[in-house]
Length: 210
Image 1 (cartoon, rainbow, N blue to C red):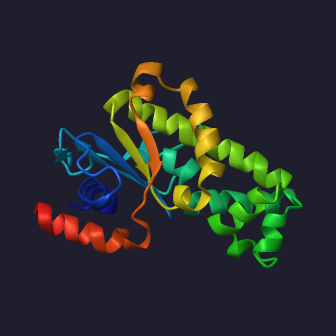
Image 2 (cartoon, rainbow, N blue to C red):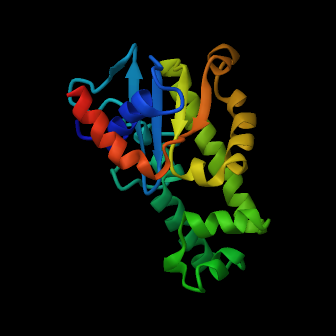
């Protein structure tokens, strides 16, 4: 097993709020964006151990270059480091006035998801515009996952935990543009409840399932 997201998916199935779920997808949403997939109670790893690499679904082949070498990957739009990097570049190259920079202490290189969320909460116009784009790409990527895997549950990590309804409400509103009603209605979408214990519980889950 080569993916933290796989371990997190196992932890959610064994210890999370929806423990025992037979068809579950866990999305890591911190520095990058990865996925762990459980289908019919089994972790799906694939022939070359790359199953669940949902962060590299290409959402726009003309989009920004992803560190993986492809263009317009899900991760380049919704992974934490890539989101922060694109915000930094826009602020610097377009001379945008925004409280994001103030929350980062005036240093563009200190911009991260935490200060981005602070600016969204205080209704900064640039932050709100960027957040809307983030939500739309997240809905697009998750729509592909739901249509492909028809999971019972998608569990969202890190940013969903910290953002709460700031993320969940607009995400739920945007999803019907990207997925049929039937699979969407049958899929619960929830932030992880494992919090800071996820690391220890993931290691325990891998040991139990080995």
